[in-house]
Length: 247
Image (cartoon, rainbow, N blue to C red; front, top):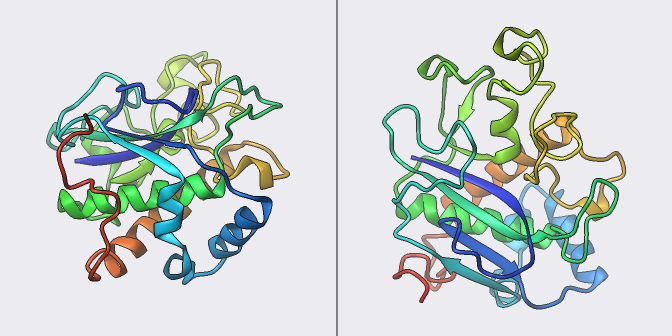
C-alpha cells in the first residue's frame, strides 16, 4: 500500500475525488506562517507544532475506507506495483486559478504542509504502513528512478515514472533521467498541479525538480517523525481519521 500527497487545482471545497481531502477554512497571519516555517527548519519542530490549533483551521474529509483504489491517482502508480494494493491519495484542495507565476487565492502554505504530514502519519499508523519504507524500481517496468518510497508526493512519483509524452518516450535519454515530472515548472508537456514546493510564498528560486525532491523528502521525514513519536501519546487524535467516512 502506498500513500501519495499532492495539491489539487481546485477551490478549498470537498470534491470526493480522493481518499482524504483537506482545505484551509480558517486564517493564518504572516506571523503564524513565519513561526511554522521556523519549525520546518528545526529537526525537532514536529514536537512544537500547535497541532490542535492548526487542525481547527482546516476541514478534513475522509471519502472512503482508506483501502479503495480510485482513478484519480498518479498516472502510473494508482496501485502499489508490488502487490496491487491501493494508493491512498491525500489531497490539499487549493491552487485554484493558479498559474506558473501566480499561486492563486488559496495557495498551499507551510500550514498545509504540516497538516499533510500529520494526516499521512495517521493513515500510516492506522494501516500499519512503514512510513520510511522504499523498494527498487525493478518491481515495475514503468519506474525509472529509485528508490520508490511508500510515502511520497505526486511530483516525486512523476519524476520516477517513464514519461511517454516526452519525444522519444522511454528510449529518450531525457525520459530515462529525472529531468521531467509533470508538476508545473518542470518543463513536462503534461504539466499539472502536484506537490513540488512546501510553501510557494516563501520560495524564491521557483518550482523545479530539486525543490520537488526536497519537498517530498521533508514531508516523508516529518510523517515518520510524527508517526514514531506523537501518535501513541495520550489524547492525540489527529482528527478522527480512524472513524467512519465523512458524511
